[in-house]
Image 1 (tube, each protein chain N blue to C red):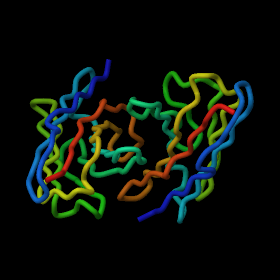
Image 2 (image 1 turned 180 degrees about the vertical axis):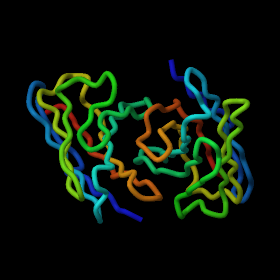
Image 3 (image 1 turned 90 degrees about the horizontal axis):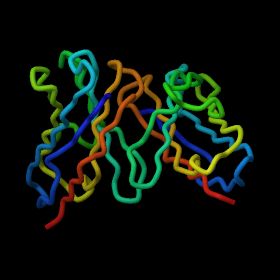
Image 4 (image 1 turned 120 degrees about the vertical axis):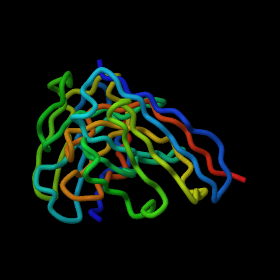
Length: 107
Length: 118
């Protein structure tokens, strides 16, 4: 099984600042990498797929990059509604696997 | 508007069985792969199983192989997860989610809580 490792575990950011989240795969997943956002008490929401393609309705301040085994999610200017937990997921191999999550909190 | 509504969760004793369901609407259910993803209380997401649109392929995470069975009824737009030999570590909120076969999880339900406890 492919192990996905996210860093940091917690990121403290002030509103309006940039946030950079990392995700590393234990082997190449090509560009078959997605990012999800989860707020307390809510289901996850797809943000990014194909490593860099925003899902429908996702604001342009969210961007994804990377391929192979190293990926990044960038939130260019954090809004109040962006404070949440973010998960990466590979869907290149079965079983699909998630990272452990990065919590983005208000500094 | 895509809607996925899970049901069937509850409290069950270790070693017993439970079946959870997911009713789909607002999209062509028979054209989409369907997944179960779980989240233990206060923990992260764990992918559990997938079934392809026509039911021809199924995959499971190792920890549930041989105990859980995913199935679907395209005539009823409903996804199922039959869970046997339940363990305390299966306690979680179980989400269903849709995808383009082996793609990312595009739409999610709100989950049904399964608690395994004596």
